[in-house]
Image (cartoon, rainbow, N blue to C red; front, side, top):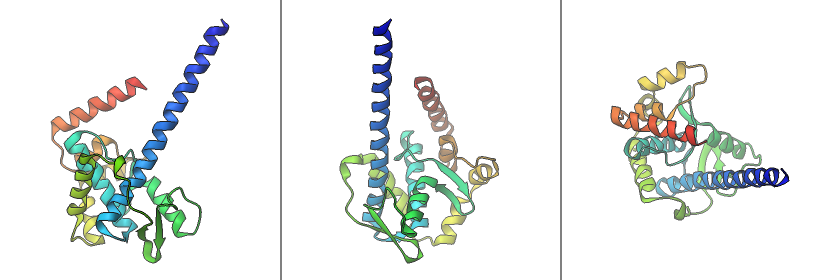
Length: 196
């Protein structure tokens, strides 16, 4: 009996360590994505930065069936928002501690500045391709045009939901993904739930 309990405790500890390592990797990758965008655009407003990352995740979902980041998005008044990034940038802006303080600074009018270059080891070629497409997708649009552009049919449906949470399917649909892509995403989500 004692061996079984020890084995269970060992297995639980290993699963916890694995989950912590995955979370650390995902958080670092998000930082590198932010820095990659800023390395391509220069200093930009937090609004454009967050919308660019949304569009990059959407591009990647539509082409490859997964996100560049692991961020969750919510439909807010001014469009889709990765709330984790928004909270971190807001903390920096107000002079509070943030897990992003080492990589970016936020100046007046919420202008985000990179404090270092991205570590490209965290980004695949397809990640960079999706981010580059997202930058081009919003290029030449001002804040109001970006907001109008992202306030499409799916946004309005998500905004009307109580949770205002975008599913992966919602994100892909907002970009006009085909039914085949949507079905593939549904299958992947189902598989991930079964494995967890």
